[in-house]
Image (cartoon, rainbow over all chains, first blue to last red; front, side, top):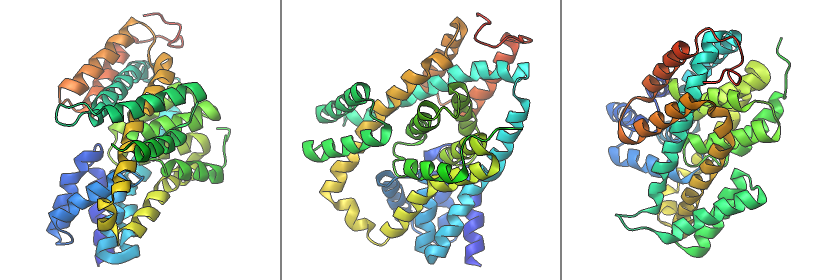
Length: 175
Length: 189
C-alpha cells in the first residue's frame, strides 16, 4: 500500500539523516528505487526547499508525498520523516532532564557548549559563501547583510523582521 | 514536578510563526528560537538552549524538528513537544502542498529569485547576533575557548563527523571537570 510505503521510506530517510544536505542521496535512493520520481525531480525538490520556508527534510517529504500520492501521501511522508525526532529525541530529552545536576552530565555539557558554539561560528563562515560568486565578491549582497546587521543591532530587529527587510532590500537592489 | 511555563497552544503559535521564517537551515532557526524562548520569554536559559542545540545536532532526524521537540518538552512536557514539532512543520507543509503544482513557474520568476537571494543574505547577520548573545554562556574559562576554536577549525577544515566531535567533547569534559560539584561558572579553569 503506497501510503505505508511512503511512511516507511521517509521514516528511513529521517533516521539516516544527520544534517540537511546529507539527506539528499538517501532521498534519491528511495524515490528512484520505487520509481516514484526521477533524479531531476529530486534536484527540483532541493531548489524548492531553498525557496520555501521549512527544512529540507520536511519540504522534500511533503513535495515527494504530494507528487506521488496527493495530500494523503504528503501527510504520510511528512509524518514518517518526523517520527525519529518525535520518538528518539523526545526520549533523549526526557532522560537528560532526569539527569540534570549530576556532575558528569554538567561536566560533559561544559565542554560541549563551546564546541557547539564553534560549530555555529563555522556555519557563519560557510554561509558567507553567498557573498562570493566564482571568486568575485558580490558587493550588493554584502551590503544587504551589513544593512540587516546594522538594523538588527540598532533597532533590535527580530529574525523574522530581519528576513522581511532582506527580502525588500533584495527586491529593490537586485542581486 | 516540572512547573509548566507555557501552554501547548501558545507554543504551537510561536512555532508556527517561526516555521514561516525557517530559512538558512538549522542555525538560523536556532537563532529565532533563542529569541522567542530565551530573550523574550525567559522560558529557557541560554545554557539549556545550547544544550538542546548540541543534542539536536547529534541525534538522527531532522535537526530543526529535534530542536522543536526538545524546546517544546522543556516548556510544557510531551504536549509541548508535539505542539512545537507540528507547529514548526505546518507552514512548510502548507506552502509546499500549494506550490507543487506550479513550482516550475515560480522557480524561473525574477522577482522570486531576488527575494530569495535577499533572504540568504539575512542569514549571516541573524546568526552573528545569536552567536553574540550566546557567547558568554558557551564560553567561560580558558579551556572552553580552546574547545570552541578547535571545533571551529575542525568544522571548517576537516570533514570530522559532528556527532563524534560532540561525544569526544563530552568525554573530555567529564575528565577535565570530574567531580566538581560546584556550578561550572565558579570552577575557574
